[in-house]
Image (tube, rainbow, N blue to C red):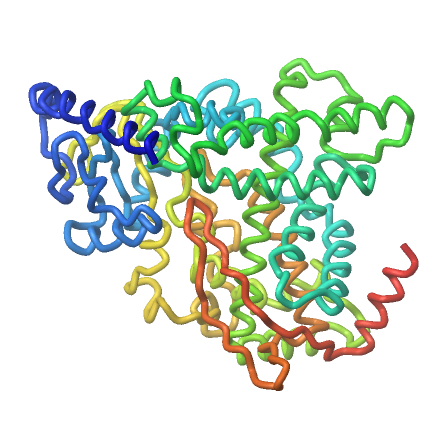
Length: 509
């Protein structure tokens, strides 16, 4: 209590000193800035934000001020884009100016500044994305179909046998083991579980530690990093653990693959392929963070989408029934659907498109920065401004998605039942040169999981000990990545032939 009071008093004193300076040093711009709520001196609009769900505040501001708005948080300028058209105009058509990332000291303190998604635009990023393209481009991602199917089959059996209130664990296990198989190959079984557990812990901690608000705070008050972590309590005291975990996951699986290669037991993977042949344009310090980013991003985002998919299936049984009917019509009754059947199953794609629209896993995306001054729509956008695409607002655009709060996969289909837009073009994957380089891998792995689940299982409400239905409310976590809060559901096999086929395959492994 005493340390918190001292810290609060110190910050108040700093604000009292800095506010007058902020008033004196206000920059004059050649044109009006984008509109937005009136900021307070120095604090800006920080007190007006819903810090747990800032995308909701930005969406409300968009309705009041327009689809491109400006706000300030602790002296840092933010431009928020609430329109897909504007996102395309700036991040796609002017990508050379909008492909940077803000450099926040908190990323370095947490040991995550090597993450590909957080790198500034430059040569290191180009090297990373070149490797990503080689490993996760469309045709290569499609070649992993046996990996997707093997792990999706195991997921179905685990859901059928496992605890119905531990959906997050099953989703993360599927997403994690699939991406591990591609990046690191067949790791020792005990080690794989340890890596998954620590990756989950790191992801949970990062949600609390690495946020735009904390980035702004450490930028505004650099002296804070000199104080011992116990002064802050809560999330700030976890920075050291975040840094420790990130270093472990950066190095340990990589070192295990090297050891396997030395004794001849390594399976084919991103790492083993890299280490088995010379590379003039990349070294270990480049490939390790690429593998780390693939692992962490692939596990967390895919697992989140998979959890949201299962939640939607519980809440919308008619959607589930239509998808299953499509599978049963296109795929033999005793055969599991696979990527070769995908062209005959457009409704599965439509469901996944709607899942990512209904609740975008990263509602504010990853922030961009401007390399130079720019002008758009008669408004001035200064160099160094942080630009964020409010994916939540884009997903709730009633002109594009009527009755946007309703879950309706049919909105992604044409009148003759074809998919309107490819899954990889989904707004949730980002825009411009920083669009997710692993989107094809995510597409194929999620499609295989969803199709496999629907081919065998019916997802329904769970029952309490008295046989009463347990209601499910679509509640979601907060943070930079949002997932469904834990919910109960029931998995029931509705195709004994396919179930028997899966069990036989599991027993033969």
